[in-house]
Every structure is written in C-alpha cells, then in structure tokens.
Image (tube, rainbow, N blue to C red):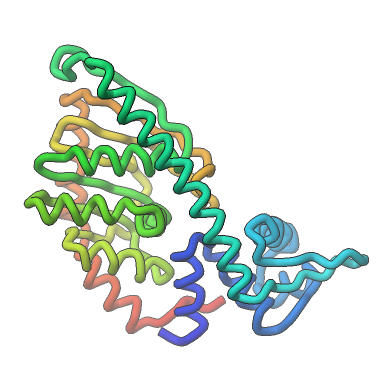
Length: 278
C-alpha cells in the first residue's frame, strides 16, 4: 500500500468518506483550489466537489476564502484531526449518558418476556444503530451474526462496538459477519479479524442488511444508504425480538455464508492489485 492510499485509508477510519479523504489529501498536496480545477483533478463533477467541500468545512478540515471566486484550502492535519476527534468525543459522551439513563430506567421496570409477545421498534439514525449493536452484543450469550455495508465496519471500529465484540469472543461467544470488502475497507476489516471475528467478503452484495443475536433478536434493513460516517446520518432499520423472523434471517445468512469468501483472501487480492486509480 503506497503512502497516499494508506493516508486515505486512515482518514476513512477516522470518519471521512472516501471522496472526503481524497479531496482533503489533494488539497494538502497541491494547495488551495477553486471547485472547477479541483473537480477536473479528481475526475468528478463540480456539484459533487461542492458537496464534499461543504462536508469537509463542517468537519473543520477545509477553510473557504472570503473573496470571490471562493478558494478552498486544507486545514493542517493536526488541527483538522483534533476537530474531528473532538466531535466524535462529544457524540460518544452523549451516547454514554443516554446509555446510563436507559440502564437506570430498565432496572426500575419489568418488561414482558419476548417469548410471550414479539415487539418491534424502528431505528432511525447511525447513533441508534451503534447503541443497539453495543447493547445486543454485550447481552449476547451465544453468538452474533451480521451482514452490513462496508461503512459499518468503519463505524464499529471508531465507536467502540468492536470492543464489545471482543469481550463476547473472550467469554466464549462467536461472531460471524459478511460485508463487501473494498480497498478502502482493508484496515477496519482486518481489525475485526484480529479480534477473532469470522468475516467473509460477498462481492457487490445488494440484499437485506441485518444482524441476529442468539437466534432471537434481530435488526434488519432493506437498504442502508450511508453517505458519510456520522452518528446523525439517517437510516431506517427494524428491531424485533420475534424468534421466527430471527430464524428466517439466520437461514438467509447461512446461504450467503456459503457463497462468500474469507475476508483474509479478499484482503490479499486487494493488496496485490493495489489501490484503485482515481
């Protein structure tokens, strides 16, 4: 992996999308630019560059000039990453506070058995997905199955879900996952392999994304369109403790597992092939 590709991979692992990482690196290397020549250099559309620059400005990683035409400059790496890290820390503190509140409320209430009545809940943001995943994994007794878009591998790495997964494996549980592993996903994919998860690659997957815990609880979505790595990114998923639905999803997982290849093999292929051309 060359220096540029590794730098982009690390930026993605820090919460940037691939387009944001490429744009930020280009501005760092070649200096301030207006959108038109920047779009030409990155071989994309001017409107696409505008969206990416706006997102980078919100993250504190790019600074626009006050004169016209507007020139966009990359903020130095230390300052930019410190701003991004501060934002993640703020979001995590908020999640931890919500988690404590929920734990206190659950201790004061008695909930009906899931064997008596199946319950359903809609999850509406990445923040809720992370909270649900952490709770489900920490409560798992046997194991955890999942099929997720590659962006979720980055999110679980950044926001502590992998730490809960490692604890489950240490206490004898299993975790098996399927995702489409692309070049930009090598680092987060390797991380889940390193903690003991069984991860497989399914090329160009386009079906249901879901997770199943202990063959009882499940979270599922027909489509998870994550445009950027953010806790506030909107999604639409269904959580339920219906064991019949969990059984159906598990059967689907088993079929796809047989059709996929070990992520370690995919990573080796990607490293031999090298980064995609811009």
